[in-house]
Amino acid sequence: MDIRSQLGVYQQTVDSFLNQCIDKDSIDPPLQEAMLYSLFNGGKRVRPALIYIVNKMLGGTLEQANSSAAAIECIHSYSLVHDDLPAMDDDDLRRGKPTCHIAYDEPTAILVGDALQCLAFELIANDTNLNADTRIHLIKMLSKASGHQGMVVGQAFDLRNVGKPLTLEQLEAMHQHKTGALLKCAVLMGAVVSGNVTDEQLEHLELYAEAIGLAFQVQDDILDIEGDASVIGKPQGSDLEKDKPTYPALLGLEGAKLKLQQLHEQAIAALKSFGESADELKALADFIVQRDH
Ligand code: GRG
Image (cartoon, rainbow, N blue to C red; front, side, top):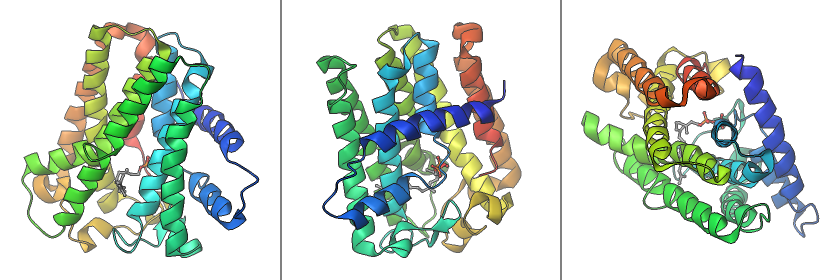
């Protein structure tokens, strides 16, 4: 299976849905332009892909998954726009292009993030393909994963600990919240929108999601050291320069690679009971540990 071309298909699917959902008659065209700039600038769409793949594996239709896929990408894009701000990570480049506050300005970037976050929940709330209970369930999941019990607290902990030595446990807890919570949420939202998942399947999917969530981060840390700046779309060594705690810093580069391999094995093992129907999820786990950007 060529997961890269399959990711391209999911990317087009979620992009065309997102395009339809942005109000083109805004009274402030510059805000709308900056939202589109931040949403459509070459993201891999891994989180929407997870939703589409799990939903399909469990027998759901595309229509059931579109709003969740678009919503989670809105949350992800908002988090990147805010993360790049001078008050946070202060980055000028994202996906190889000027970050939102550089291309526009800081107030616009703050508002783009705010608007994308609201849009995420609006998309699910308005989705008439899903019954009201499912919409509420999805909104609860996404708000928990992205808010003070998920991504936001992970980010707060990260910012507060720059330059401080962290234990492996603390580093892991930080990433489980900062990046892992949203990736896990994508897998579980895919299961919920399918309307056809057992508790046992949910448990296995949760284990898979936890393993790929951490693997995603370990690979991100490795790419910061070994990646090609023109491919990763940001300067190499930026974690080191900012004195960020990373897996290679704690485990050494070889130790981080071993950790990545173990997490990959855990992810694949968690899918055993799904048999061949989980081939695409397995291919996505391969992609996450092998990705070059
Ligand atoms: C501002 C509340 C708030 C949170 C920001 C996710 C995050 C929290 C910050 C991003 C920092 C970062 C670069 C983390 C490494 C892992 C990560 C999320 C990488 C970017 O995700 P990809 O690779 O990005 O899915 P693309 O560009 O493909 O969408």
